[in-house]
Image: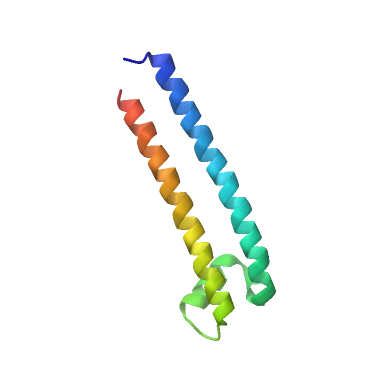
Length: 95
């Protein structure tokens, strides 16, 4: 049975993993947004506004739609990884 200190250390390590994932996600998204700006000038209005525009499917190029899907996949992938780590943290807290 691990000690309280060992559990707290494991939890801190897992939080570090979450913060690292946040950083990696942000770097990957910024690179994708830069690529997206080249094909979608409306991105300068803001990501949320562009997403609403894309989801209404008015005048969106295939290339822009592809990048939009890649951005969604990036966000989903990192959220799943962070959720898995958060589940480990929750399990350790119960110990």
